[in-house]
Length: 299
Image 1 (cartoon, rainbow, N blue to C red):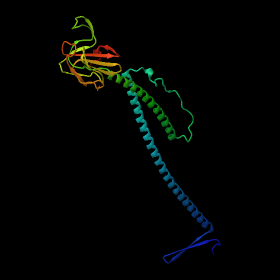
Image 2 (image 1 turned 180 degrees about the vertical axis):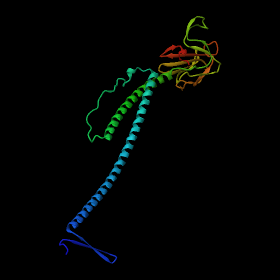
Image 3 (image 1 turned 45 degrees about the vertical axis):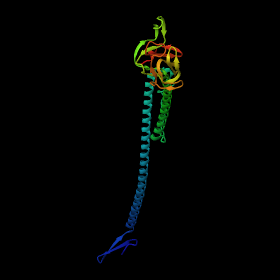
Image 4 (image 1 turned 135 degrees about the vertical axis):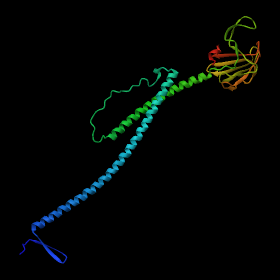
């Protein structure tokens, strides 16, 4: 006779049937085991889906980190390029200053000093990550480099203005021979070939072939061009900044008053007009109205 709370399980196959009798405790255990297996399987599925979601988030984070790394790399490259430009500007600045020999005290940024003894301390919180700290360091570095560039550029601008001014003055100075020939009489005291007395010669006489072109010793403007009793055909050029040159005894004048000439332009030809003993060029240089020795300017 069966127990009151027994459970019978009949399984048939191949024309035969078998019965399995399970007690109440066994049935409860089987149900509990199945429930535990179901809960474990459900938990596994949940964890699996959660892990898949986390893997997706991790992939997105890795992509963002990769993009940020690329951005930081580009910024670093730009800063390196900026540092190279700063060093180049400083090298040019030093070279230019050595050429013009400007006193270091005139440099606006000479007294600028950087405080290298300042300390950095304090605790870092979770929010102050490596990326944000690197951003701040890059910002500070960029600002410092920008200040250095601005100061160096201002220094170079001042030097360039100084050089430009000196270049203009140098270009105004008569620096080439007006004609190639033999120096027969220099600047200073000499015996006059006409009176046989001591006189002061205000220029230099250059013997050259008659008709040879006479060149402007520097760029300038013709302020005199005509015939005078002593000088014969004469041309005077004003070069600016107090410089003037005079060309006398010309056989031919090729410029008129007001004409602008460049260095080396032909302004006339060698001749023997005026009071002279032969074909030659009388050449004078005046600075601020006073005659000076032309040899000082000739190359």
